[in-house]
Image (tube, helix red, strand yellow):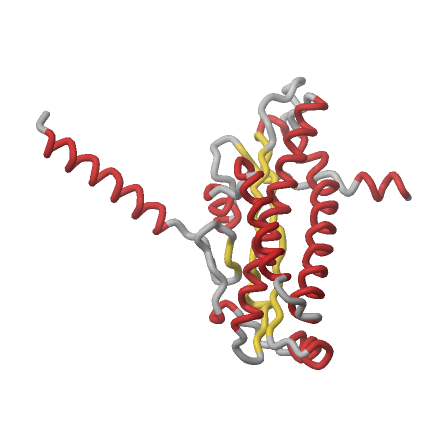
Length: 237
């Protein structure tokens, strides 16, 4: 095969792959889903109510308010639901992604300083999503079980959501309220380092696909109707 022919084929393959990546959906009518190249813009603040924005503007002088969450779904093999099968086979699967809720995010006026902070908070959510995945995998390995997501997702998620909100509060205080010099850069650097350290646990495109289509994307799987609640809170009660 001639060199020009090989080069032409390689260009087609690379171009097709890039187009497929660009065409993949990372947003629906309600939510923006985290990916490395996804950026929050003013147009994503679509709440019809300014109540939160007015509250934070009166209290802290802020002009924008964002709603960011960790959204997750657990699917299980259909065989887990069969009473005829004594031993269950296959692993449950977790689909998890940070989301920016457009309809719950408001803006009184555009503010570039606040916008970059909300992008940072979005990345903090991804940082915690990676920590959550890592802990679930480690729990699965330590306990040698195949239903770790059904049993421990809620417990571990609650812990990481609490950590996420605590980090957000510190960033709000340092950067937006007290406006300490260089704190944004310090937080940005720290979050970037943590994201890089846990790159292997990054939110994947198939997870976003599952959350958007809202039905199982793997054959032989169904959404788990129930998953275990917070075991930590149950133990404390």
